Length: 236
Image (tube, rainbow, N blue to C red):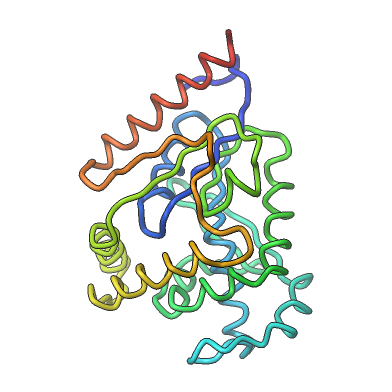
């Protein structure tokens, strides 16, 4: 799609874990020529850093003081290689590492630390200063870009999201148990919805998409339709 004559906008896509929001956000960005930022990958990268430096134990006890002190040393960026986008942690490709169940089981408590959220929100806002960006996460439309021109909130049943997550992990060659993944999904929902700092919630002006019974093509078409409607309003 040629967007050279269209106004650049900010697109915020929030929703539950494994709801498919990252895939649809990535596809929309590719279709309209925008930059895509996976904010969840950024929190996963911080979690991986904490794990690598023994700042989080198996029982999820976090050395918050050490992690907060290390935040200025954590550099996160994204690299596009053909059809794929990779997450870089201090210059190292950690895309596979951050998608592991070990990171999934630890990312929510790390994400709930206010200093971590403040640091990453600042980084995300800098990435989106020039607009022309599609960013997905938990608090993009409510905290990161509350003035985003287009806001979407994606949801699906926990069972559907667990099934999708298992299929995704298996496709990447990562062993996965449906029961373990479902438990992780439900646990992460609880933490995301109840944390004190920027909890997961639908922005008042967001459009809700329940994609439980939609195909990938259907949800991508739906999202592109919403973008085209938003641009049409901007051109009036």
